[in-house]
Length: 461
Image (cartoon, rainbow, N blue to C red; front, side, top):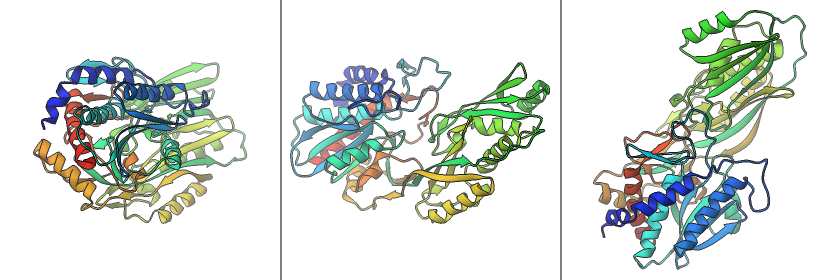
């Protein structure tokens, strides 16, 4: 079977279907939730779009109250799961073509979600479509499960698996090839500053400090508002020049507004980005702030001084990689004084001990740590039939070794009892998930679709 030939014959419809999905700004919006749309109308629209494709192509569909849904083909007691997600992170500023205006240029398709995870989702869908259209005999059911809250709290798969059967095994097309059989533990927490009695006489009063939209993104923009009678333009310009930073400063009747630009990146590797909040906090730290603001800014600079938690004494490393820590959302305004922390820790790390260290450090700065959600590490043995089958397919189609990998990202694979991440980024491809001008190589999407078609057939035949 020439799987690549099959996807090439469907290339035009593949790109047409993908473009339609990428045009939907399926960002979580909890201000507009409703019946059967728990994550907002645009996320609901993306799910409906996939249902429409499935119904057009003759798949059975199932909607689980807008949390998630599946497209199914085949028959049998066992289920092969392909876990994808349709929600995307916020667009951010500075796109060349527009975040939801999918554009093909230089062999790439640019749009939010092209890499994470709508492009790979469509590649997996077409892999399943090819198997169906060829009428290949299967002994298992194949379900392409589409979740709607992967970029936030995973409420989608939790609700889905309350109602639907757990697949025997499966994969998530939401990371890298060849095969990722181990994922770090994921921890999301909120650090809340305790009130401090205000001391009169400070030269600069921090009114607000705001940065970031998601815990799992390195924030690319930060804003601070400061009340003062001092002139600070030259000092701010000197700071920008010294640290090669990009920011602005405006004055209006006793109030300065400072902004700072950073570089967005996925929190699984904070060093791929530049945290705008951390950089702006560095400038504010040079000023004699009011006590509440000073402690907040000092805390940011201490906790997020490095991406490996070394300044906190929580560093850890093993074959799955280093512990990483990211500050994604900062809110200091009115009665809200919080910062989020996103930690990804190695398989062998004793995380409870490290979490206790972080709580103690936070308390010493006047902050309390509360847990939003915590997912332990995930691992599938290298001799598992799922791993061996996917390895055979990958090596057969690429001629390259299907070595196993571990990552700091969290994919839907960990929601399966036996699940791995399988593509769609090939070795050497640039990972631009969560970044401005996110893109995916069209050639890589077609290659991935061919691999997924054969993998689905081999797992379900």
